[in-house]
Length: 228
Ligand SMILES: [Zn+2]
Image 1 (cartoon, rainbow, N blue to C red):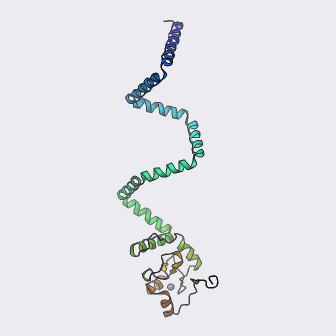
Image 2: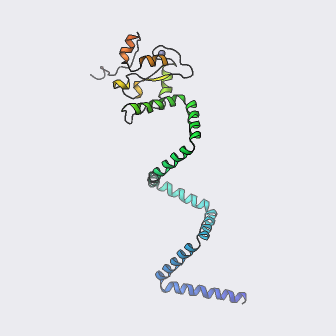
Protein backbone atom coordinates (compact mmCIF):
# COMPACT_ATOMS: atom_id res chain seq x y z
CA UNK A 1 0.00 0.00 0.00
CA UNK A 2 1.35 3.38 -0.95
CA UNK A 3 1.43 6.25 1.49
CA UNK A 4 -1.38 7.86 -0.43
CA UNK A 5 -3.52 4.74 -0.12
CA UNK A 6 -2.72 4.51 3.58
CA UNK A 7 -3.82 8.09 4.11
CA UNK A 8 -7.02 7.45 2.16
CA UNK A 9 -7.78 4.38 4.25
CA UNK A 10 -7.27 6.36 7.42
CA UNK A 11 -9.54 9.09 6.11
CA UNK A 12 -12.31 6.56 5.32
CA UNK A 13 -12.03 5.00 8.77
CA UNK A 14 -12.36 8.40 10.36
CA UNK A 15 -15.44 9.21 8.29
CA UNK A 16 -17.09 5.93 9.17
CA UNK A 17 -16.28 6.53 12.82
CA UNK A 18 -17.99 9.93 12.68
CA UNK A 19 -21.00 8.47 10.81
CA UNK A 20 -21.53 5.79 13.45
CA UNK A 21 -21.13 8.34 16.19
CA UNK A 22 -23.64 10.71 14.62
CA UNK A 23 -26.24 7.98 14.06
CA UNK A 24 -26.83 7.40 17.79
CA UNK A 25 -24.69 9.51 20.04
CA UNK A 26 -25.89 8.04 23.35
CA UNK A 27 -25.40 4.44 22.29
CA UNK A 28 -21.99 5.34 20.89
CA UNK A 29 -20.90 7.05 24.08
CA UNK A 30 -22.17 4.18 26.20
CA UNK A 31 -20.22 1.71 24.07
CA UNK A 32 -17.08 3.85 24.29
CA UNK A 33 -17.39 4.06 28.04
CA UNK A 34 -17.86 0.33 28.26
CA UNK A 35 -14.76 -0.22 26.14
CA UNK A 36 -12.76 2.19 28.23
CA UNK A 37 -13.84 0.52 31.46
CA UNK A 38 -13.01 -2.92 30.10
CA UNK A 39 -9.63 -1.69 28.93
CA UNK A 40 -8.94 -0.13 32.35
CA UNK A 41 -9.93 -3.34 34.12
CA UNK A 42 -7.73 -5.46 31.91
CA UNK A 43 -4.74 -3.08 31.86
CA UNK A 44 -4.40 -1.51 35.29
CA UNK A 45 -0.65 -1.06 34.90
CA UNK A 46 -0.98 0.70 31.56
CA UNK A 47 -3.60 3.03 33.02
CA UNK A 48 -1.39 3.79 35.96
CA UNK A 49 1.52 4.43 33.67
CA UNK A 50 -0.42 6.72 31.36
CA UNK A 51 -1.82 8.66 34.30
CA UNK A 52 1.66 9.10 35.75
CA UNK A 53 2.89 10.26 32.35
CA UNK A 54 0.03 12.72 32.03
CA UNK A 55 0.70 13.99 35.52
CA UNK A 56 4.43 14.43 34.84
CA UNK A 57 3.72 16.33 31.62
CA UNK A 58 1.11 18.61 33.23
CA UNK A 59 2.40 18.91 36.76
CA UNK A 60 2.44 22.69 36.89
CA UNK A 61 -0.96 23.12 35.27
CA UNK A 62 -2.51 20.60 37.66
CA UNK A 63 -0.93 22.23 40.69
CA UNK A 64 -2.08 25.68 39.58
CA UNK A 65 -5.59 24.41 38.94
CA UNK A 66 -5.71 22.76 42.35
CA UNK A 67 -4.44 25.88 44.04
CA UNK A 68 -7.01 28.05 42.27
CA UNK A 69 -9.74 25.66 43.36
CA UNK A 70 -8.53 25.69 46.96
CA UNK A 71 -8.46 29.49 47.02
CA UNK A 72 -11.91 29.79 45.49
CA UNK A 73 -13.39 27.21 47.88
CA UNK A 74 -11.46 27.89 51.05
CA UNK A 75 -14.26 27.03 53.50
CA UNK A 76 -15.31 23.93 51.63
CA UNK A 77 -11.71 22.68 51.51
CA UNK A 78 -11.34 23.38 55.24
CA UNK A 79 -14.46 21.35 55.92
CA UNK A 80 -13.24 18.51 53.74
CA UNK A 81 -9.88 18.45 55.50
CA UNK A 82 -11.54 18.47 58.90
CA UNK A 83 -13.86 15.65 57.90
CA UNK A 84 -10.93 13.66 56.58
CA UNK A 85 -8.99 14.16 59.81
CA UNK A 86 -12.03 13.02 61.81
CA UNK A 87 -12.50 10.01 59.55
CA UNK A 88 -8.93 8.88 59.95
CA UNK A 89 -8.51 9.89 63.58
CA UNK A 90 -8.99 6.44 65.09
CA UNK A 91 -6.73 4.85 62.51
CA UNK A 92 -4.05 7.49 62.96
CA UNK A 93 -4.18 7.27 66.74
CA UNK A 94 -3.95 3.49 66.58
CA UNK A 95 -0.98 3.71 64.21
CA UNK A 96 0.73 6.22 66.48
CA UNK A 97 0.08 4.03 69.55
CA UNK A 98 1.43 1.05 67.65
CA UNK A 99 4.53 3.01 66.65
CA UNK A 100 5.09 4.19 70.21
CA UNK A 101 4.74 0.62 71.45
CA UNK A 102 7.28 -0.82 69.07
CA UNK A 103 9.64 2.14 69.60
CA UNK A 104 9.32 2.39 73.37
CA UNK A 105 13.02 3.05 73.86
CA UNK A 106 13.06 5.83 71.27
CA UNK A 107 9.93 7.42 72.77
CA UNK A 108 11.46 7.33 76.25
CA UNK A 109 14.65 8.87 74.92
CA UNK A 110 12.80 11.65 73.07
CA UNK A 111 10.68 12.34 76.14
CA UNK A 112 13.80 12.62 78.33
CA UNK A 113 15.38 15.05 75.84
CA UNK A 114 12.20 17.13 75.70
CA UNK A 115 11.97 17.21 79.49
CA UNK A 116 15.61 18.24 79.79
CA UNK A 117 15.16 21.08 77.28
CA UNK A 118 11.72 22.17 78.51
CA UNK A 119 12.00 21.73 82.23
CA UNK A 120 9.41 24.40 83.05
CA UNK A 121 6.84 23.00 80.62
CA UNK A 122 7.52 19.46 81.79
CA UNK A 123 6.84 20.49 85.40
CA UNK A 124 3.51 22.06 84.42
CA UNK A 125 2.71 18.97 82.36
CA UNK A 126 3.39 16.73 85.37
CA UNK A 127 1.21 18.92 87.59
CA UNK A 128 -1.64 18.73 85.10
CA UNK A 129 -1.28 14.97 84.97
CA UNK A 130 -1.20 14.62 88.75
CA UNK A 131 -4.20 16.92 89.22
CA UNK A 132 -6.18 14.94 86.65
CA UNK A 133 -5.29 11.66 88.31
CA UNK A 134 -5.93 12.59 91.95
CA UNK A 135 -8.56 15.32 91.82
CA UNK A 136 -11.66 15.96 89.84
CA UNK A 137 -10.31 18.89 87.84
CA UNK A 138 -12.19 18.06 84.65
CA UNK A 139 -10.64 19.65 81.61
CA UNK A 140 -8.85 22.38 83.60
CA UNK A 141 -5.18 22.77 82.74
CA UNK A 142 -2.40 25.06 83.83
CA UNK A 143 -0.95 27.01 80.92
CA UNK A 144 2.25 25.47 79.64
CA UNK A 145 4.13 28.77 79.92
CA UNK A 146 3.04 29.34 83.53
CA UNK A 147 6.16 28.17 85.40
CA UNK A 148 8.41 30.26 83.18
CA UNK A 149 6.28 33.36 83.80
CA UNK A 150 6.12 32.80 87.58
CA UNK A 151 9.87 32.26 87.65
CA UNK A 152 10.29 35.73 86.14
CA UNK A 153 7.63 37.28 88.41
CA UNK A 154 9.25 35.78 91.53
CA UNK A 155 12.72 36.75 90.31
CA UNK A 156 13.87 33.14 90.47
CA UNK A 157 13.23 32.85 94.21
CA UNK A 158 10.95 30.85 96.51
CA UNK A 159 7.80 32.82 97.26
CA UNK A 160 8.17 32.10 100.99
CA UNK A 161 11.81 31.88 102.06
CA UNK A 162 13.24 33.77 99.07
CA UNK A 163 15.87 31.11 98.46
CA UNK A 164 17.20 31.34 94.95
CA UNK A 165 16.24 28.42 92.73
CA UNK A 166 19.32 26.62 91.47
CA UNK A 167 19.02 24.92 88.06
CA UNK A 168 15.32 25.75 87.90
CA UNK A 169 14.77 23.53 90.91
CA UNK A 170 11.39 24.75 92.05
CA UNK A 171 8.16 23.04 93.00
CA UNK A 172 4.83 24.09 91.54
CA UNK A 173 2.50 24.72 94.50
CA UNK A 174 -1.26 25.20 94.57
CA UNK A 175 -1.65 28.19 96.94
CA UNK A 176 -5.01 26.84 98.09
CA UNK A 177 -4.38 23.09 97.96
CA UNK A 178 -6.53 20.99 95.63
CA UNK A 179 -7.23 18.82 98.69
CA UNK A 180 -8.95 21.83 100.28
CA UNK A 181 -10.95 22.59 97.18
CA UNK A 182 -8.47 25.01 95.61
CA UNK A 183 -8.72 25.57 91.89
CA UNK A 184 -6.40 23.92 89.41
CA UNK A 185 -5.89 27.28 87.74
CA UNK A 186 -2.99 29.58 86.85
CA UNK A 187 -3.89 32.17 89.49
CA UNK A 188 -3.75 29.57 92.27
CA UNK A 189 -0.12 28.68 91.59
CA UNK A 190 3.18 29.80 93.12
CA UNK A 191 6.71 28.47 92.90
CA UNK A 192 8.28 27.23 96.11
CA UNK A 193 11.57 25.64 97.04
CA UNK A 194 11.38 21.94 97.86
CA UNK A 195 11.63 22.57 101.60
CA UNK A 196 8.77 25.10 101.76
CA UNK A 197 6.58 23.07 99.46
CA UNK A 198 7.02 19.85 101.41
CA UNK A 199 6.48 21.52 104.78
CA UNK A 200 3.37 23.35 103.56
CA UNK A 201 1.95 20.22 101.88
CA UNK A 202 -1.88 20.39 102.07
CA UNK A 203 -2.13 23.19 104.62
CA UNK A 204 -4.38 26.18 104.18
CA UNK A 205 -2.11 28.99 102.92
CA UNK A 206 -3.15 31.50 105.57
CA UNK A 207 -2.54 28.99 108.41
CA UNK A 208 0.84 27.98 107.00
CA UNK A 209 1.89 31.57 106.40
CA UNK A 210 0.82 32.64 109.95
CA UNK A 211 2.62 29.70 111.53
CA UNK A 212 5.80 30.64 109.72
CA UNK A 213 5.56 34.41 110.09
CA UNK A 214 5.31 34.88 106.35
CA UNK A 215 3.68 38.02 105.10
CA UNK A 216 2.61 37.44 101.57
CA UNK A 217 0.90 40.13 99.62
CA UNK A 218 -1.63 38.67 97.21
CA UNK A 219 -3.99 40.23 94.75
CA UNK A 220 -7.35 40.49 96.59
CA UNK A 221 -9.87 38.00 95.33
CA UNK A 222 -12.68 40.58 95.41
CA UNK A 223 -12.24 44.17 94.50
CA UNK A 224 -14.68 45.86 96.86
CA UNK A 225 -14.24 49.33 95.42
CA UNK A 226 -14.97 48.31 91.85
CA UNK A 227 -17.66 45.90 92.93
CA UNK A 228 -19.79 48.27 95.04
ZN1 LIG B 1 11.34 28.21 100.32
